[in-house]
Image (cartoon, rainbow, N blue to C red):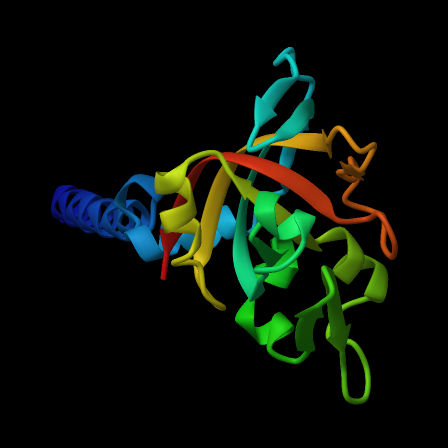
Amino acid sequence: MQLKTVVKAGVVMTVAFFAIESIRTSYSPRHASPAALATRAALQVPVQGPTDKPAFAFKGFQIQPLARFAIDAKVLSREDYYLGREAELAPMDLALGWKRMAEPAVYRQLDITQGRRWYFYRWRDAPPIPVQEIVESSANMHLIPANAAVEKTLRKAREGASLRITGQLVQATDASGWRWTSSLSRADSGADSCELVFVESAQVQD
């Protein structure tokens, strides 16, 4: 009887092990759906690092790279621009959110708008997360498409889409002395806090 009991216990433990392993692997990253992977990617923090890329001419402007930049984020809002010197260089702004600001349950509690190259948010009674967290996990970004293919991809980015871009944070100047400089911090707000991004690659997933 003792031997039968041991055998039965062994069978039960083996079945339990494979059942648990099946559940675990079904939720592992390599088995996750593209949508789940995109959601996790949207929660990441933007990556910024030093760059050795030299200054270059682009559409009549001089572009000085300041830092390498990559971000996976949710599109909170977009605004296209058609008039003025800035529009010639960066024809669109995207308000982007990452970490908790990439969660629909959070950003949908905010009234988000854009205008005049600014990004605005309001809430009804209380902010869904601390205000400083909103500041540090969202931003209005002025996007300079590196080429026609990148611009075509960026124009597909609508509210709620997952977006991945890589490129350079830059300073743009022209012969008149005009200057447009990117922020290099995710913790600032107000004037001069937006990122000016020369976008070298872009991927959009609805």
